Amino acid sequence: MPRMLNLAGLCLAAILFSTTGTAAQSDDPHRIYEQRCAGCHTPHAGDFAQESLLEEDGRLLGRESGRDLRGFLEAGHGKLEPAEIDTIVEQLGAILQRGALFQRKCRICHDRARELARLQLIVKDDILRGRYSEREIADFLRDHGRLTEKEVPVVVEMLTQHRQNMER
Image (cartoon, rainbow, N blue to C red):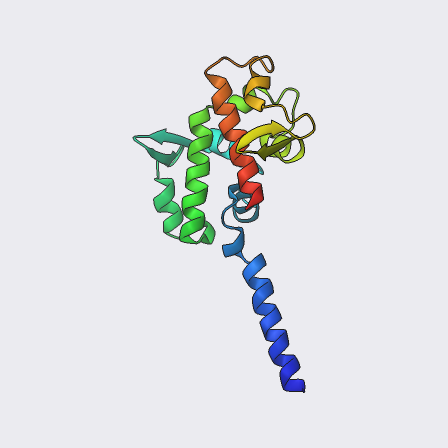
């Protein structure tokens, strides 16, 4: 009987680790940044990207060092797994490409984009909608937030990505 309990305990531990370990969480770039990077860098990935990185020829480089971010991470900085490196480099690159649009146009009234997406938005029928009104956010943003017609799809894509990251 004690042997069976030990075996059951090992199985339970394996199941718990597989659902709570790094690999299970590697899809959410915010979780990766907050758990693996924010202890030494700024608390928010968006601030880090804007302050510390630049994009040149499709690569992210350290603003001061000029070092390639992917290569720096692959060499062991942050001790990230390869999938985590892909996720974080993709997220930081997307932040730079958006040019701090949310910070410039939305942050004056709203919390961080991730929190806005988590608390106020849903994806229903593959469309980003208001959680309570179910109104399409793309339509709503055309009359809200001082966004230009070109900026609306950028914000919708960003907020949709936040929702999808949370649902993983």
